[in-house]
Length: 127
Image 1 (cartoon, rainbow, N blue to C red):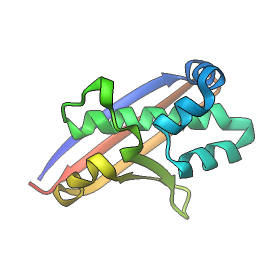
Image 2 (cartoon, rainbow, N blue to C red):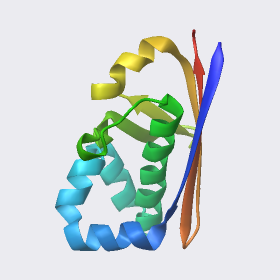
Image 3 (cartoon, rainbow, N blue to C red):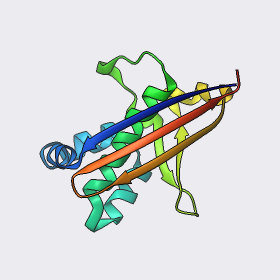
Image 4 (cartoon, helix red, strand yellow):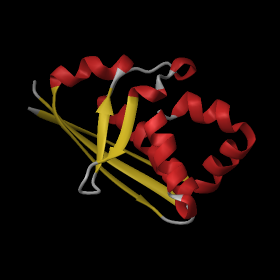
């Protein structure tokens, strides 16, 4: 077995500005319906929630260690949801679903505050 990791940090204000400028276009391109519904439901922490999920997608890309064409990134192929316990969980679908057979576990940790959001991912591969 082998482990790969990825980490990403995002400035919340950057994501907030993009959402305010391009709202539907950006949200529908990057986030899944479940992610959008969850982030919008957090009201006071809406932009932090979007920013940390954006960081999560970037961290997963890094941990998957795959070549991704930045002009055609399948952002919605990585979904971050909350389990009943409140712990975040990554679901690979679409373009990245093929990796599920090779992966034992994806562990993710998310954190955010007013200005910054960070995500850390570790993937345990079956090898």
